[in-house]
Length: 467
Ligand code: MN
Ligand code: MN
Figure (cartoon, rainbow, N blue to C red):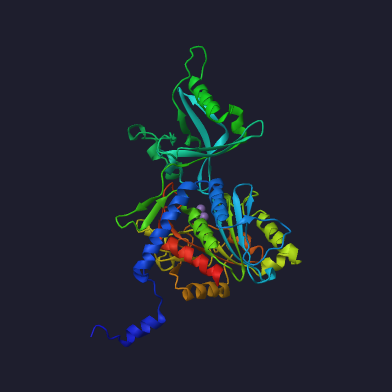
């Protein structure tokens, strides 16, 4: 009796959407593959905590897979693999297709910058015989989350003589780490009355960097002097070299599995390195595509995509122009025929804060890659709003390849909102839609993703590139 399907059940199967968890839809073999895939993803997260480090990782992986530096003006053959780096912070990778370039390219764009604390140009000071560094936060953070947390320091310092020194301290087991202090509850009576937004203020995000004085009775500010001595010995720098430095404080902890079942990953910077890694891996695994494949790992998304390494810069458009020029094809022809997955994370439904989501249109952890027709705020302001036709194309592609996917809006109408780089791609007359992985605690020092969603994102990019 239990195997007989009633007419209502049959009709329901025919007419209503399947929103089953990927854990129920995927075979055990596929689930094992997803878990294995995420081991590589965790290693990427630990190796690439800043845009510069993620760009370096991408280039090293690409070179290992036979990619060579792109030369503008050169005619490439089908199957050739090239990359181009923009100022060490953004990378474009391309696999040349068998079709002529005027047919457009298959494009995916993800960003490799994440919210963090940047050191100010004059960061170092001493107060109460402690040495601290002033910071200016980068991207949208809840400032109170960044206190009382081990931080590592990453970046570059350009010395007066032009030499560049790389810094990466706080990641190795025996490295020291840094920290923004917070007030003890016993004395926090006034602080606790502040709004959450003001819990820790911008000018309170000061990083503790030292406490030991240089041994000399005659001078003042001996703790700061001692830090300068250590920095001079280690990096050969003097205080004024901070003026030409980019030093970024990020959470020092490594990526970890979350939960008894290890089904999720907790790590810093998954927005948007989760899409960067999955798109990068798909680019490496895409063999002899029909349409030319282009993957962009861009910078500056978290501060509005401005700056010459952000997608609002012309660097991507120039790359397409350089790629097409040897064939006498104008960039606008290539761009107008290009299809793009704007690859960025979405807010996963959080059962602890259900009130901000509209459950019928929210994305859920482990229900697959999220396809988002539009983002924006207040009546779809600041979005590209993909066409039904392009949404239909993406949907058919995902279903054909049995990729578990879902749709998701960023929260309830008028709850807030946000945008992605999709608007800058749409401005180039590209067909573009947002896809990505649902994230819990987005922009927090420790963000959560589901392993099945991470793997589905990889499979979606590969399917898009391979068809
Ligand atoms: Mn993002
Ligand atoms: Mn973000």
